[in-house]
Length: 102
Image (tube, rainbow, N blue to C red; front, side, top):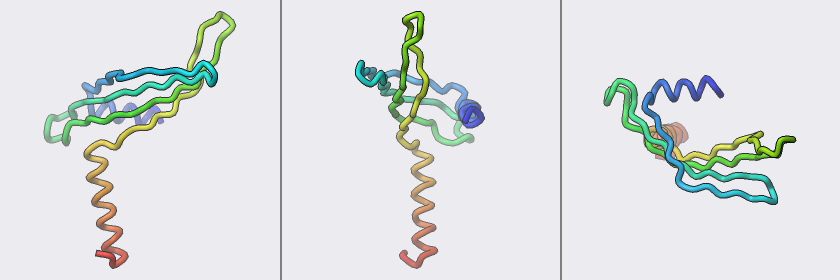
């Protein structure tokens, strides 16, 4: 997973995250973070379109002996980027054609 994050940051060197909202649940110890990411591809327009997507991170937390709270697990739910959607649309067309549904 770390390599995937590194590759994404290499492709979008100016990648930025903006926090839109944060909520927590004292009962479950979960923290919910809504965010938006934006970035331009390395190599300008040759590297593809800019990326803009929104997502939510759900963080499980636990207390420490010093009274601090630490994140012990994070699940990320992200909206697909424009490029990912275009690739998915092409895959659907290819699958439909291969199955004789077009």
